[in-house]
Image (cartoon, rainbow, N blue to C red; front, side, top):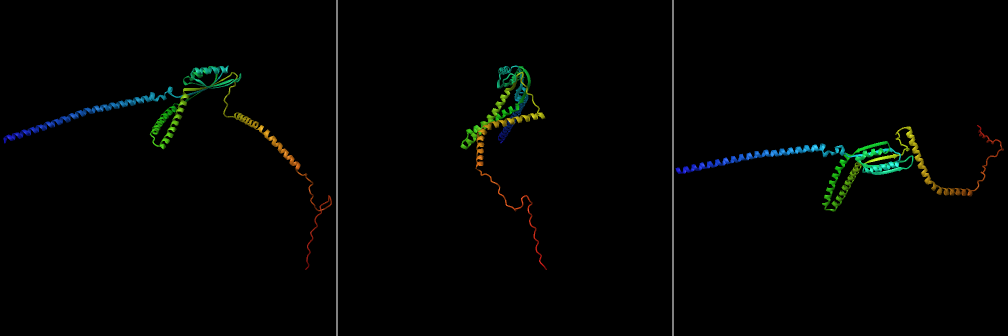
Amino acid sequence: MRVRGGRRRALALAAVGLVAVLVAGACGADSGRNDSTSAARPAVGGADAAGGAAKAEAGVDQDKAAAGGSGAADLRVDQRSIIYTGTMQVRVDDVDRAAREATARVREAGGFVGGDQRTSGSADARAELTLRVPADRFTAVIDGLAGLGKQERREIRTEDVTEETVDLDARIATQRARVDSARKLLARATSINDLVTLENEVGRREADLASLEAKKRRLADLTALSTITVAFVGPQAATVEPDDDLGFLVGLRGGWSAFLSSATVALTVLGAVLPFALLIGVPVGLLIWLARRRRARRAPPAGPAPSVPGPAGPVGGPTPSAPPPVPAARSGP
């Protein structure tokens, strides 16, 4: 019995020891997991913090670039789209020679002559040239043209089309995306109705895109090449001074000019109608005159007017008066 009791105690102690070992191992594992988790969490938090800092720095860099970098290049003066137009009048001794010199200078600057209108004459010789020159050579060319003689008038106009250019670029990009999407839908069309509808839509979008691109090319041409209109006048040519807009003399001059214009138009119309009037009106008038003459010959001669009978009386005497009325007979009582 004692032996059995000792064995039971030994088994109980062994079971208690095993349970204690298992509990200790579980506690150690839990503590290790907690330590590893706590160690990993700061690392993840550090990575998130580093990513947020990087994003913040990138945002700051983008803001800086948008403020003064390539993202806002249109705000700088040297990157703006400006159209330059100049008009000037120069009095020279030889109009033809000045026109040739102006043409040569424009070609040397990389431009060309867009128009040439000249009036010959010793006293009123005049040449008006329309010149297209690069925008960066505009000032130099116009100063050189002024040096060919005595400058009498100069007018320079500028037009800033930067916003319009940027708007056109955005609209062109959007329209190109719309065209691409319509073409993709057209490639996946399965029915005839869808095919026809999508073809019409693609054609309309492509036409809008072509119109926008044409406007962009026009603006690019105007900004790349400036326009100069120069008039070379001879030494004795009259200078046209600008008139006032209001005043009695201005109105009288305008009315007289209108009258002369109206008279010129009336005489022109009369000159155009006169040949037809002579060829048609003269024969017609002659026929009418002959017809009236024949009618006058055929008409009977007019006789004396018939006399109306009346009471006879002395010639030259007074007209006899009517007899007095006879009173009615009175009957007796």
